[in-house]
Length: 335
Image (cartoon, rainbow, N blue to C red; front, top):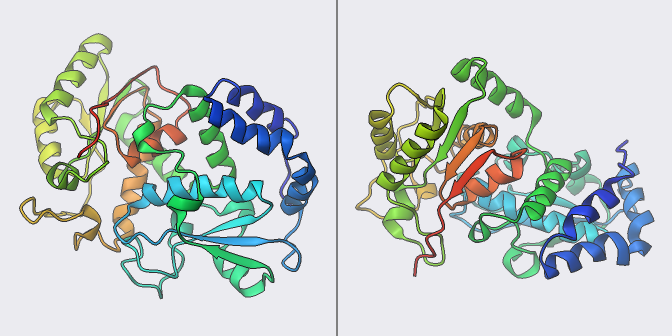
């Protein structure tokens, strides 16, 4: 049985009143105006009533979208359909995508990385539930929050999404535990860590329209040096899918750089101008996505952060408890 925190309503209201007008209206509706649905919502949490509960299966039929593109849209849709009295279930099995390697015979890959709301799973819903609907055009029907183009978030908004995501679709506990073990091995007992996330490869090659412009790697190195001069970090945890960026960073900070070692060599062809997810060494590679998620978890636990605008940074800000100092590059969008 899933218990509800009775202070949750007041807790969220306290922070949403500090946010933008539309943000306020949305959650006032959820927690105050929509009081008629409150008892129904509590009942949904207290029983797996496959006969009477309404379930909605959420699909994001984007072939080239990465893990946190799926996740941010899924979290936004979970909120929307909870408000409407549904139990939302994320489906990344029944349609081809780069996470399942375009193989719909695989299990629901979402459940490899994240928990479904209220402890359900897709298979049991399809087998047992009587009232099921499906949606797949998420950009039209769900709020795009949290979105990379809004970075950095207002703290009240970040605080809400962080707590909402951790409550309704948290990362699998075994991955959290593994990230803690990796951090102990990398940093021993040090907490004085700067996290750096740099997005390269297809972003700097394709310059995808309406996606955030990425900074030059030399500008990132300059800012890391400036932060290191100020705080004298014990270690710098650097995360990037771009091997060229990794090599440059290691040469710049040989005594402080820490990374998760990977056996996966992308061999990304910059001349081919291909989306990273379609790379033969990434497409359908569960281990690559686990490694990516572990990097995001560790970055979220660093003392300070320097990051480019991308969906991975959205993930960091959802997971973090907060940073002492943070820099996110805001350079506009590719046109």
